[in-house]
Amino acid sequence: RVKVGFLLRSLLIIGTFLALMGLWSKLLSSQSDENNPFERQMPGRDINNHLLNVGGNGRAANKFQPVVPWPQVEGVEVDLESIRLKNKNAAQQHVADNNQQNAIQKQYVTFKPQKHAYSDPVLRSGVLGNFEPKEPEPHGVVNGPGEGAKPFILGPEYKEAVQASIKEFGFNMVASDMISLDRTVNDLRHEECKHWHYDDRLLTSSVIIVFHNEGWSTLMRTVHSVIKRTPKKYLAEIVLIYLDAHCEVGPNWYAPLIAPIAANRTSCTVPLIDYIDGNDFTIEPQQGGDEDGFARGAWDWSLLWKRVPLNSREKARRMHKTEPYRSPAMAGGLFAIERDYFFELGLYDPGLQIWGGENFEISYKIWQCGGKLLFVPCSRVGHIYRLHGWAGNPPPAHVGSSPTLKNYVRVVEVWWDEYADYFYASRPETKAMAHGDISELKKFREEHNCKSFKWFMEEIAYDIPDHYPLPAKNVEWGEIRGYESDYCIDSMGHTNGGFVELGPCHRMGGNQLFRINEANQLMQYDQCLTRGPDGSKVMITHCNMDVYKDWQYFKTLHRFTHIPTGKCLDRSEVDHKIFISDCDSAKMTQKWEMNNLLAV
Image (cartoon, rainbow, N blue to C red):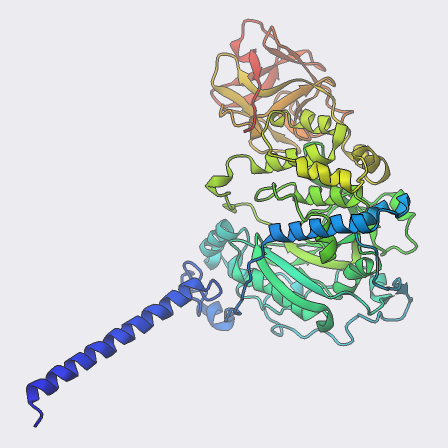
């Protein structure tokens, strides 16, 4: 006979065991969700209701559903150092096997020769190109928000949530989350682009999308647009890695971008990058450029990214308006390059940290070492630019201060040769900056018979000094501190007509770093200080070497004199204003000193 006590104890043990198993299963499920970033809920939002914490009556939440579920993504860690070593050993073997080659083919000692057969594209007026879509692109949501890149504007009840999303991500994620991942976009190409015919022996591609702290819907819309608008036979894979990604490719973006590489493996191509408004997600061409909106990538001598109009010399090289054209540099976020060639170039300088300068480094390396960089008018990709109010992504603590400046110094020291003096004239605080070992990079230049920066400036980047003249030598540089004061002149980030102000000295450079050169220009980066429209206040505005030669600094007198008026630089520590006034040697507010600052 089974006793009742024994039976009850057995049931209790079994029940406890089942309860523990259930709890363990729930914990495992919870950990799995936490470890999967594509299933993680956005802070402050329910993944099944993105508008849960948004004020108002919530009616829009019922009309537009969030873009879920997110896809599963699997990653494989790649050891880039071993790949670099493999390519280096292969290159050395290639040198040994080909040491009898003619000197004119030296570039092929380490860069493989072209083997892929490819015919040039043909323009046939009135005949639709062979890669053009034959049917209209299907809508993500018919008449849905943002379709056709039409403005999608939210009501005032979303203001708080919108501002929070801009602070976190740099753009309006509340609106983005309501827009279909598969939305249609407007076609911004020139009409001529629709009549190019391309050899279908194009290379297949891995599309690398880099992201960090990214809004999920903007990231996934990037992925969806690539899948939707790329011929399947050419898309090998989409790889998601670290940094940022918030783009949408345009109609028939792939063939025009890849065709120049299929014809010449040492070509690197860049699409025309259109502007996606971070508030309402409309798409329009970037401002600037020539009458067709075409521009070349450039820089000023402090290595700030610039764009200059496509010039007549480059236009004369083309038979048709929409052919690819040469550019000295690229912005760096969107480009195509043959995989093996990228590795043969040594990838990016491994000593560059976080962000900044890598776009110039790869541009100079391509041009000076025998390749070419082309902008492609018929390939267009929209990019969301961060809005004012974004909190940013601060670098990790182990990186230290000024990673971008250190990157610039590495690039200049490796590639600019004697032109480095112009960078240090514009960025004097970097002259003594430690930038790490660059011996391997200089060795790469030598082994690959790379050309000088002088050749590059004369043959490729010849128009940049027309827009950004070579800077004069500095007379003095540093912070402009009120004599025996703790206040300094500060641009407050103002440019192009804003006024400088007086602020507490922080000795960190940046907005308080100025220089006065032999041309009598008082400058910060590519901006000059000059008299404002009221004749008194001092403003800061863009300048070249021929204008705003307004200032003399008398170091022993601690005085800045405004040459056109004969007046002196003055300040008010009460209302923090900077202005010019009649010179008075007894006025302490007209006495200044320039103290050198060094970036570390």
